[in-house]
Amino acid sequence: MIEGLLGRKIGMTQVFDSTGQVIPVTIIEAGPCVVTQIRTKERDGYEAVQIGYQEVRAKRLTKPEQGHLRGAGKLLRHLREFRADNVADHKVGEIVTVAMFKPGQRIDVIGTSKGRGFQGVVKRHGFGGGPRTHGQSDRLRAPGSIGAGTDPGHLWKNTRMAGRMGNQRVTVQNLTVVDVVPERNLLLVRGSIPGANNGLVMVRRAIKGS
Image 1 (cartoon, helix red, strand yellow):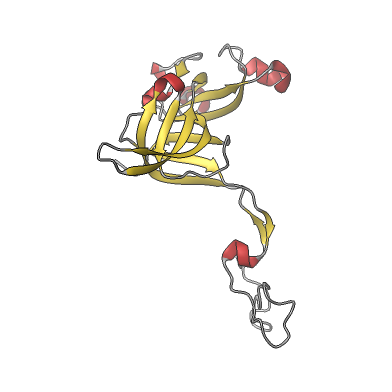
Image 2: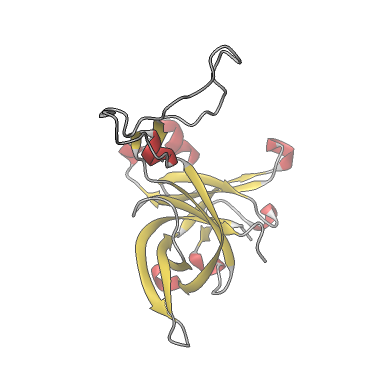
């Protein structure tokens, strides 16, 4: 079995369990995905299954990309590789659906966080800023001192400063599958996951949870 699936984040809502408790859930449209390539240890040096998601028109892909996907029978926008229990059990063109997950199962969800652009230290790192008194009208959200002078005479690496915030790969581990709706390719996951609505996500079996 392939350990993961591609999909997109639909949004958040809430459902009720058997005891009437409200559970906040994120809805993920996971799959259907198509196996586009089988990686073998003899040819590639490792074993994996490459799957594709979201059909597109031919003009959206280059000629080499179209040639690569010819065996799968569909033109797909997103390609990712996942481990599999046994790659020999899979073949190019195979359809992988959300039915591989079960309610109560633990999963990891990988997405791209929302981009916040270039931000200062107050928003990016939670700095308190300078004092509001003594006429410091331009130091309210400034970082303050960033290092000593003579010794060491330079800035240390990884000093928290202003810069680009967000738009990074984020993994949320050990989320619980609340429900699976195979006929609509939907996965209801307890809690929130990174990224904006309609963003691409990777859903895989939890590597730490049981």
